[in-house]
Length: 103
Image (tube, rainbow, N blue to C red; front, side, top):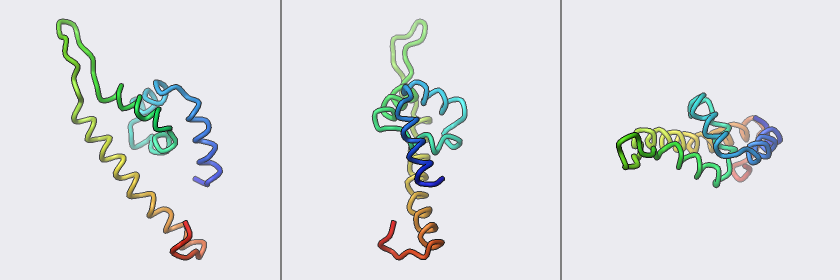
């Protein structure tokens, strides 16, 4: 994705309600939504994680349950995305012939 495409995606995603972002991620999966997650604002991600990781009371129960398995999926996704970002920048620099100080 080019820089201008990424910026356009960020503008569009920033206008979406966090609930919409969460539903898209839930429907298509975290791996398929990597660009969407990367384009989401911190406030959107906070709301998405709140809805995605905490499950409210069910009939006959008063407890709120934390989904530890889903939390691990998120951690793995975010770590993988963070590790991939510098690699992509290094590959782009090599293709352009840029030096180590160029991002």
